[in-house]
Length: 100
Image (cartoon, rainbow, N blue to C red; front, side, top):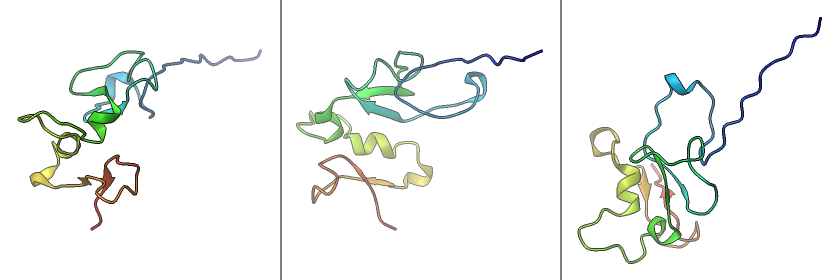
């Protein structure tokens, strides 16, 4: 007798393995327009959501609004700054990981 395995397809803007019940996602962003949603075809506020190219590149950030780099660094231990602005355009203006 041949056994069959169930295949579950879940589409979104993030990739990983695990069960939905035992997985926590935070500070996850994807480029708007590249997929329908982050998890199961929808966004989840403050967990997994889209950002425009201008937002990701911190173009014309309104006063009093956190920059995208600040969003990426939020929640890091002891205010650790892991992400930085792409000042020399080495990543086409998108944030880069800071050097140690």
